[in-house]
Length: 305
Image (cartoon, rainbow, N blue to C red):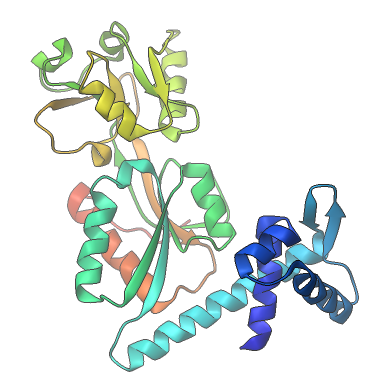
């Protein structure tokens, strides 16, 4: 497998954009890494990087090579996982990119349940919003993505999809918490707002709905951290917005879905890179995660992209 090690060096240079940074990550000298790059370029008969002021950037030939490298490494991981399964011991590594809405209890509970059965499978969980999560799939930095409202992408193969309402979130003593059931957006806008910032799909979804109504939504506080917003809600009479999967079971909090006349539900997607064969451990975790989401939210797995 030595040739794959050399190829993985090229992929790391492409990822980091710098010989020096890649050498630090790989724990080799910059001069040795430079020779590896030059040897590959000599074998291919063409440069694969553009040398720019800030480091190294893949050219068109390099893009093709790195995609091939990532495919080769992924295929080897899949074969290793299949060989481990033959022995009756499931091993492997699962890399998941997920929106903040799922890190409170959904993903931890599913990882815990899977590792209780297969303790030799390890996990990396990256918190990424919709655009970044799909990019992580394409870059082979993640095997699976669990996100809200991802952008249309030919690279995304959908394994499971369902809808979630957006809820107004407030502390239990807030005036809006005195009633149950759906709440109108205009009633929320009459209070101080603690909003997700525009790095999150949730904010774009709300902004579009408010703009259609010709209303304004000046925030008292903005943050890219849903956890921060939940903690602020506990301390002040502000209204925030989150989906049910991100709202903890906390008696100090109250949540009311936004009336469907004012705001559509959001799409939750579990997906993988289209055309990629997942390792056994990852594929089985994906199956279990889809089944768990089905149990929680009452939707069915899908097989399209």
